Each structure stands twice: as C-alpha cells, then as structure tokens.
Image 1: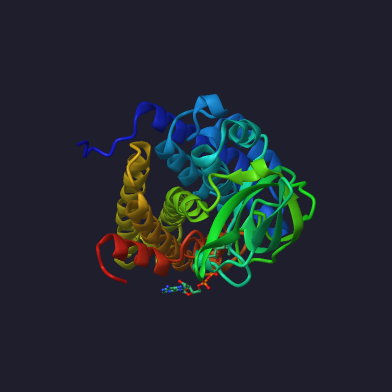
Image 2: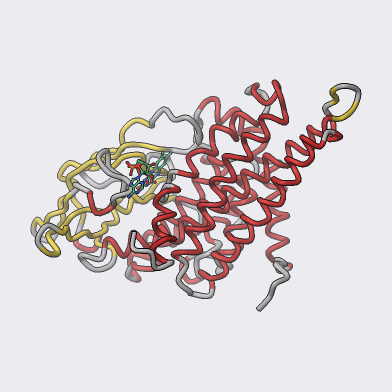
Length: 386
Ligand SMILES: Cc1cc2nc3c(=O)[nH]c(=O)nc-3n(C[C@H](O)[C@H](O)[C@H](O)COP(=O)(O)OP(=O)(O)OC[C@H]3O[C@@H](n4cnc5c(N)ncnc54)[C@H](O)[C@@H]3O)c2cc1C
C-alpha cells in the first residue's frame, strides 16, 4: 500500500497545465460571467481540446483513458478559480457521459459518448423533479410504450447542462411500470435535446453557479425511440445510484478546489494587508485559522483521492464517495466564510472573487446528495439500521 500520496509525473503535469489554463483563460473572465450569467461555451470547447472532457473515458470511446483521479485533479484546478466552469465539466462527464459508458450499448456510446468525450457536446442527467429530489423513488415522470417508441411525460427540476448551445442529450429517469405493488419500476432514457415534446425552460435565477446552465425541463408526450432506453428496463435505480457514486467524487473534488482557491486568496491577502502597523498574517487569530484550513483541505483531498483511486481500481466507492463529498463540501462552505472574514470589508465587495466563492460553495452540500443523505449512506454502510 502506498502512503506517500504523491501524484504521478503525468498527474502533476496535468495539474500544472490546468492551473495555467485556469489562471490565464478563466480567472480574468469569471467575475464577468458570474455577473452576466454568461455560459462560457468557448472555454468548455477549449477544455475539450485539452482532453479534459475525456479524461476518465477509454480512448476507444473518444476519451483519454487517464482515469478518475486525474479527472478529480482537473476539477480541483477548475473549481479553485471558477465553480461554474467546474460544474459544467463535472456534470457533463460524471452525470452525462459516465452512465452511457457504464450501461450503454456500443451504438449509444458511439452516438452520445464519443462527441461528449471529445468536448464537442455536453450531457446532462435529469432525476430531480419539482416534488422530489433526495427521495429518488418518489418520482412522477412516466414513460409508456407507443408502438416501437416511448412517450415520456413529466417535469424535471434544477437540471444542469440541458439548455446550452453544446447540450446534446439528457439522461432522464421515468416510471415505466410497477416492480411490485406500490413500488415503481424506474427506467432511464437518453433523451436527445431535439426530441419532439422535450422543452427546456428558462434558466433559473440562482444564488451562485451563475455561469452554469440550470433549468426546469418539460416532457409532453416526448417521443424517443426504443433504443433510447439506457440499461435494461427497470434498471433505473441502479443506473442512478452508480452515476451518483461517481458524480460525488467530482463534486468533492470541486469542494477541495474551491477551498484551495479561498485559502490561496487569503494567504496572499493576509501577507499584504496591514492593520495596527503590521501584516494581519502576524496575528495568530488569522494565521492559525489559515493553518487550520490548510490542514483540513489536505485531509479532504486525501479522501477525494482515495475515492477516485478506489473507483479506478473498480472497487465499490459508495461509502468513500459519500465521505469525500460530505467532508469537502462542508469544508468549502467553511473556507468561503474564512476567506471573507480574513478579507474584511474588501471580501464583501463583488470586485474581489470572495463573494462568488461564498455564493458558489453552498450548493456543494445540496446537489448530488445533501449532507444529510450522505450521512444516511455512510451510516447504512456502517451497518446501522437507519
Ligand atoms: C444548481 C443546482 C443544480 C442541480 N443539478 C441537478 C442535475 O443536473 N440533475 C438532477 O437530477 N438534479 C439536480 N439538482 C437537484 C439536486 O440534486 C437536489 O436539489 C438535491 O438532491 C436535494 O433534493 P431536494 O432539493 O428535493 O431537497 P429535499 O429532498 O426536499 O430535501 C430537503 C431537506 O430535507 C432533508 N432530507 C430529505 N430526506 C431526508 C432524510 N431521509 N433524512 C434526513 N434529511 C432528509 C435534506 O437533506 C434537505 O436538507 C440540482 C440542484 C441545484 C440547486
């Protein structure tokens, strides 16, 4: 067992490339994208050219074949600068592409995964509805067979990546029957963006992630062909849970990255800003807070890399991914709070990056499993009968 926690040469080179890209191509624009809620399509395309959208996917499916750990490193570097870009990449790869890789037919992989892995398109996953999020069995969207096709009816809420110029498909969960009395049979469908009867609504006005696309989706007799079914009929819950396990590692990496961004801004500021005749870093109230934050970031990063390494070793990651996301997302909220306190009044000004970090952090404790649901998952893995 390796306890050095060293990244390989290739992984370190990837980190350097992504840090330089993020500093040069994202950081100067992130504030403006945030203010105008502009979706950064050109930047996503460039990340595609760098191979980021294909990092965990095999070369035969348009990817780079690098694995989950390098992808986590890439997400960290993106979120260190801008969470909207990071979640666009994370959702496309982990929620859009990953279930197609794991459960799709060769034809589905060729049609949907290859362009996504090359960064030419992005994908989305729609589970949440206006009436349910955590309780994934409580959905009301339905799909019924109509000749050789399926007709989907319902509404999905808060869906990432479904309404942009790059969006190509939305993997959608729906009830296709009854598994046993009172228990729905859930299946998953790949719904093309241009499917008849499918209508992404106007983007939501959100607290943060302003440059990420989030919409309600309407399905009204939305017609998809028989080969839109992803995995077997009735395998919806399995597809969903496997997708979430992977997705949580990505969100956890984003939490570490956001916290690191807060720390880097704060260290710079603490050394420069003077109060009572000396840099505020000289006050232990400030420097100890930042030392504590660094220690917690290192611990959260170790949990993220453990979960990613387990996934790359094809081990079950249900508990590891939940633990990493729980710790990293709560840490991100704490880090944004610390950064604002250390920056004083300037941290409250939109011209600094800190309010954006502050607004972007909170959703990490909600999306892809709230902190409470993650504790439920971990407790069950521990054998507790919750
Ligand atoms: C910006 C954004 C982007 C999103 N992107 C997507 C996406 O791309 N695809 C998608 O499908 N969804 C997406 N979501 C939805 C997100 O995954 C859900 O909001 C989340 O899963 C929580 O569901 P909910 O909002 O229905 O909250 P609820 O499930 O109603 O939970 C409300 C509160 O009750 C608590 N709670 C619920 N059940 C329990 C329990 N059993 N024990 C203890 N506490 C409990 C929760 O922890 C929470 O605090 C997105 C949401 C946002 C805000």
